Length: 319
Image (cartoon, rainbow, N blue to C red; front, top):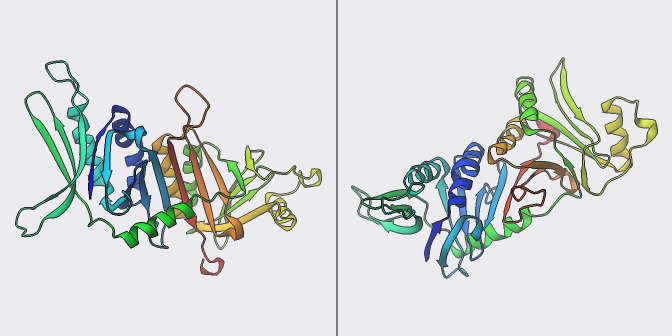
């Protein structure tokens, strides 16, 4: 089992300044999943608990001179502490982004190694970042879990493929920071959040307590997938009435999720997506948030980068 590559300048920027800060907010540890063509950072895909997130990159978006081999069809996966990974990339980037005295650029190499830690008798796996300058070298060793077995890698691959399924209707979210500020105020009222989405482009979020409800409604949002025209007779009704009528027509869905999970998913704004879409999976199995990235200077989707979250649905009787 071998992995070795050089992080490009763009790869260092994407990880250090955008994605690792966001992933650190989603959970302490994640799985790094490396294949011949992609590198992915996965939260909670191997267990049914908590918020699931998938950040996936084509290898050329992050790496140069990419080499991987394993008996698992050249696929390697392991768990890592996200904050330690971020700290190592940030520290190494401080060195590699400068130029050596002979004018050549330093390069940041990343590889899997086994080393004997101090006061240990058994070698342990590490993800090593190595930068060689003109007169010095900086090496950062990030401890990782034992690489996943063939069975676990297949299970992870299956979970990743399942996580790619899209809801039939997606509505474009309003400004994520604005939505985050609103949710920050809502979270003091309760632990669960009701989310309603319609084919008309409606997004309604609400927290209810014993004596008070606080909600926000966003209408006429962009819709991707199945869409419909809002009935004229519903225009002057309350948000609750419109939601109920659209659900009866089969044009809307509503789920209840954890306020904590919803707030965490909004931390993905740190990855600087250009826009985000919300959707509810068939049978209301989860709330999906898909973050879209554009090629710089255009409005064309950057297909080399993807990020989405899946929020588990609460049992309505548990709140």
